[in-house]
Amino acid sequence: MNFNKIIMKYKVHHFEIKMQEDEQKLEHFLNGLRGEVVSIVPNVKPIFRPMGATAKVDFLLIIEKR
Image (tube, rainbow, N blue to C red; front, side, top):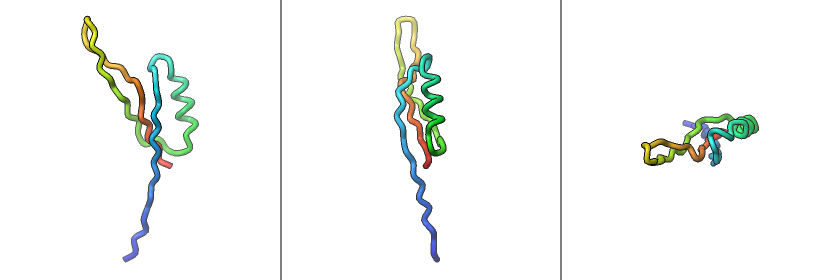
């Protein structure tokens, strides 16, 4: 049997973000990618404050299939 190998190439982009300020920057970055965006993984960092806990996204991992 002859099986053709399908090789998929992926690129992982590290995108620093401030959620309130970088919406346009993220949109421009995503529209500039050559391949298909497979997944966007946020890095959620917990923040503990005197009034309670919250969370912050400090960067995104964007997986692109080329």
